[in-house]
Amino acid sequence: MAFTNRLRGFIVIGLLPALIIYLVFVIVPILWSAYYGFFDWKGIGTARFIGLGNYAEALKDPIFWKALKNNLIVVAASILGQLPIALILSLILRKSTLFHRFVRSAVFMPMVVSTVVIGLIWGYIYHPQIGILNVLLEQFGLGSWIRDWLGDPGINMYSVSAPVIWANIGPYLIIFLSAIQNISSDVEEAAKIDGAIKAKWLYLIVIPMIWDTIKVAIVLCISGSLKAFDLIFVMTGGGPAQSTELLATYMYNNTFEIFRYGYGSAVSTLIIIISMILVLGSQLLMRKRGME
Image (cartoon, rainbow, N blue to C red; front, side, top):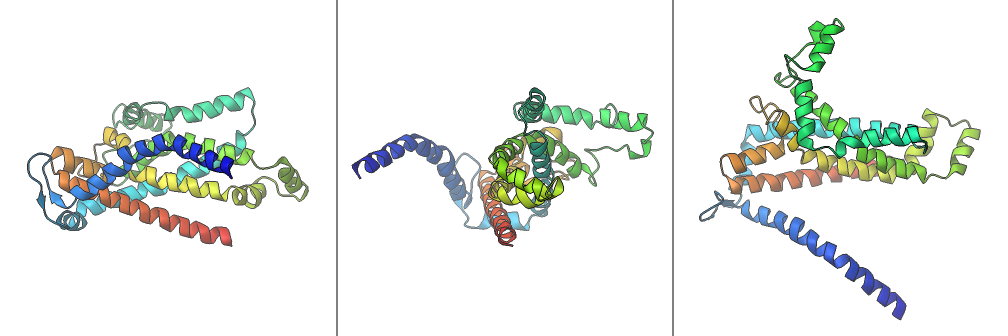
C-alpha cells in the first residue's frame, strides 16, 4: 500500500509541470478569451460590457456562416482525404525495408516544412499564368480545364483543400501504422487461411481492430481543420470577396485588421463550441457504427 501511494505521488509530481504549463498556456487563455467575448473592446482602453451582443452579431453575419460552410468543406475534405489515404499507405508501407522507410519519411516531410512555405509553393502551382498545373493541363491537351484555381469562387475552396490534405497525411500515417503493427501476425495468418485478403482483410480485420484509433484520428482531424488558418491565409487571405474565408481567418481579420478584440474573442469561443459539437457528433456516430 505504501509503495502504491509513493508511486502515485511520483506520477503526480511528474505530471504536475506539464499540467501547470497546459493550464497557463491553454486553459487560461481560452477562459480569458471567452470572458472578453462579452465586451466591446478595442484591445486598449476600457472594455464595455455588452453581454451576448458579440455572439448575436456573429450569428447574424452572413460572412460568419459562409466561413463556417467553408470550414465544413475543409473538415469533410480532411476526413475523406487524409484518413483513407493515410490508412491505405500504412497498409502498403508497414514493412521495415529501406524503401518503405524512405517513402514514410517522404510522406511525413510536409509536416516538417513551414506551412508558409507550403502555401507559397501551392500558390505558385495554382497561379493562373505561370502555375505548373495549368501548364501541364495545356501540354496534355486539356486546355478547357484551365482555371484560376484560387480566384474562381466556384472551385477555390476545393483547390485550397488539396494542399491541406497533402500537408497533413503524415501524422495519420504514423498513427495508423503504429496501430496496424500492433495487430498480431497470428490474426493475419488466420484471416488469410479463411480467405480474408486485400479488401476483406482491410474491412473485416484491420478497421474493426483499430476502430478506437480511427476515432481518435477523426477527433484530431476535426479539431485541426476547424483551426486551419496559416495555409489558407498565405494562399488567398480569405479572398477573393471572402470566398475562402474560414472561421480562423474571419476571427483574425476582425481582431487584428479592424481591432475588434471583443468580437474576435467571441468568434474564437464559437469555434471551440462548434468543434466540440462536431467532435461529439462524430463520436456518437462512430460509437453506433462500432456497436453494429
